[in-house]
Image 1 (spheres, helix red, strand yellow):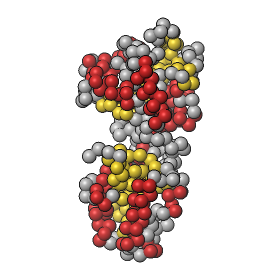
Image 2: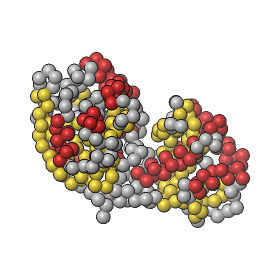
Image 3: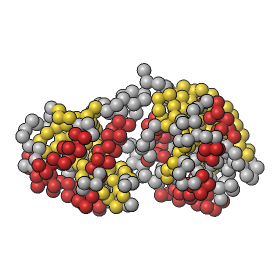
Image 4: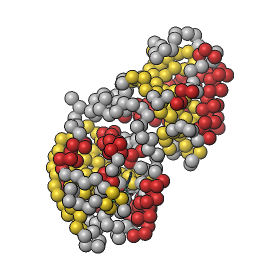
Length: 381
Ligand SMILES: C[S@@+](CC[C@H](N)C(=O)[O-])C[C@H]1O[C@@H](n2cnc3c(N)ncnc32)[C@H](O)[C@@H]1O
C-alpha cells in the first residue's frame, strides 16, 4: 500500500475537515466531555502540524504533531478513515509522525488516549511502536478515563536542536509545487533534454568529484534536481547499487525511467523543499538546483533538508553558478555563489573538502562558469 503523506494547512480541504469532524465525534462518543482532548479549535494553533495520508489521491487517514517544548512533541488526532481501519493506515501514520519528530530533533514524543475499550486498538498500536505509559504531561491529569504514553527518539546527526524545532514549517511547501513542476516539465518537453542549456552529454565534473571521495559502491546516493541528467546512468554503470534521483519534473523522471529501467534506481518525483527524506544518504549531489532558490526561506529549507537526508559523515557535492555566471537560467533568476558563500550557506556543521571552478558549455556554445563544492557533514560528538 503506497501512502503519500503531506502537511495540510488551514483552511483544510473538505475531505480532511470531514475526517477531523469524525475523529472529534468518535472521541466524544467514547469519552466523558471533560476528557475529550481531540483537537477542534486547536488546529489553528501554529504549534500543530497536521498531516494527511492519501492513497491514489484518496484520503485514508489524518494525524498531527504538536510542539510542546524543544525536546518534546505530542501526537494528536490520529484517525484512519472507517473503510481503511485494520489495514495499517494508523501504523503508517504514527511511524510517519515519529520520523517527522525525529527529523525535527525532538527527544521524545508523547500522547494521551482513552482507557475505554474503543481506544484499545489505538493503545495496542502505540505499544507496538514503543510507546509506554508515563505520568500525565502538558496539563493532562491522572484519571481513570485517560492514559498518557511516551517514547524516546534516537539522536540524529548534529544532535538535538541542529534543525529548527518548530513543527509547522515557516513556509508551507506543497508536496509538488504545480507551478514549479509545470515550468520544468515544459522546459524538458519544449527543448528536449539534450536541448536545454544545462545539458551535458557526460557529467564529467560530478563524476570526478564523486570519484575523489572514494565511496564504496553501496553508498546511498541521491541526485536532487537530477532532471534528465546522465549522472545516474554513469553511477549505475560503475556499479553503484543504491542511487536515487529526485526531481519535481515528471517529464524528466519519465525519461530517466525509460533510460535506466523501472528498478535500477529509485526515482522520486517531489519538490525537494517539501520532501521529508525517508532515509539517510551518504552522498547528496546537486548540479544547478540550489541556485534557483532566491528566497532566503527556501534556501534555509534546502539546508534543513540536506541535514535530514545525510548520514553523519555524509558528503554533499554541489554545483551552482559562479559569481560571474549567468544571472538567469531557464527564464528564472538565480543566486550566484563563490565557494565561501556556498560554504557559509551550508553552515558550520559542514567541513569543506574541496572546491573548484568549472565552465559548462551549453548546447548553443555559451560558457557558464560554475562553483563546485564538496563538503562533509560533521560526525556527532
Ligand atoms: C538546471 S536543471 C539541472 C538538472 C540536472 N541536475 C542536470 O545537471 O542536468 C534544474 C533541475 O532542478 C529541478 N528542480 C528545480 N526546482 C526543484 C525543486 N524545488 N525540487 C526538485 N527539483 C527541482 C528541475 O526540474 C530541473 O530538472
